[in-house]
Image (cartoon, rainbow, N blue to C red; front, side, top):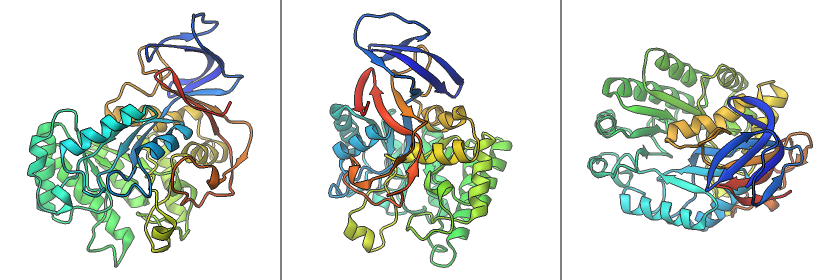
Length: 392
């Protein structure tokens, strides 16, 4: 596929040019490229590396009435994503290599969006057993207890010790479950500090999911300064909303938290934007289930907030939505450059549009963005040189 007449933008900068994708890989980037085969005329739209999500829930197995691999893949493609990292809080809990591999194989057969499936830190979320981590195959390199924190510090130490030995990355949902009913802010901050110090002691790679408080981000930045192998992600909803009652976990925070998170993003301290795409049925949401869908609105929310309102360069946003997540997950994605995977997305940055949840491709519509006017609509998604979503 030859993509012509585009404005190219990635973590390296913005420039005009064409992109040639052959056998799923970018083989040339430049002006006036020629090639046999299909040509996609971008019509002056902006071409970015496709987005990579460090934090997602496709609800398979066990909760397919909320989302499944097919509907989740469609939502991802509509949002410009070609790869997502799925959490383990399924039913049964994803604690085995067999379940994880089956899900990844099924997503590959669907062909719209590849996934990495995380393994739970403790077996079946029992809070104490980590022996299953010792027998994980080399291709399963990410573990997470998402939706809860690991209560027992000794168990977390044992898990991070194994992670350091096997080259696993621990994806931390920082929440002291004993403190959550008392002070949700303190629950995130204290567990952030604890997990950072355990990672420092064991040498494990630590990724802090959905960092939402100023204090937690400050601790992450300080830890990086002293050499701890820690990265972080921020969600679109934690930079868009403040003092908002929409139920998510961690909660929507204060205005000063939002301002500090954006400052950290502008300064290059945040490696990734993770959607925490969390589909729920209307009944479950009405009962208080935390979370919102995010794949189909993530780029627009972030572009509108970070670039148009706060003045961050587009290349900074691309780094956090493509290059940074790819580096965390060990993928050959994230740049418009020769040798990288031919995963790209065309976006319209000039014309506003109104979010309509009834047009979502995913099964669930639990979003507070419905009716909001945003910029940065995804017009087409290309995975390995094949169009997976097209609104041109």
